[in-house]
Image (cartoon, rainbow, N blue to C red; front, side, top):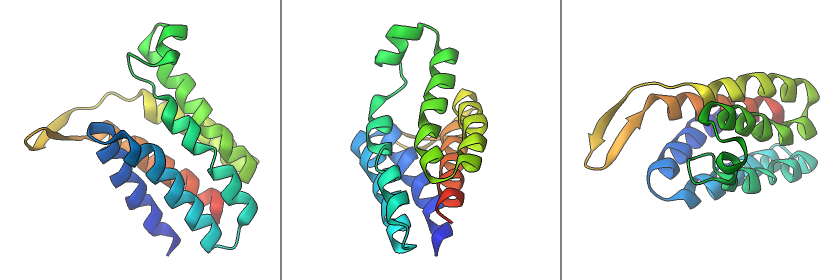
Length: 141
């Protein structure tokens, strides 16, 4: 079902954030695009492919966004807004919700705990990618 993409996006986002960036950068757009195609929404699938580029931008201390905006909190807000832009192609109403929800989710600072060796459970990543997954899912429907 379509709601299975939310846990997949959360898993890919969290895993890709700590280890293999390509999992996040490529996995999330692939899951989203395939879900749109499965729903017979080809034009929405095209819009979701834009996530490849946006998720590859990054928002950390070595990103070009940090070089431009200098402050972490501004970078996170800008990144959240940019992340919502492809959603406007799918639905302007959901895009508007994304423009509010995604910068908020990316701005959160929450605690984490160790899972296994170098892997941590980051609550902020869980919130970020759950928000992204829900926004994507609603925009596909």
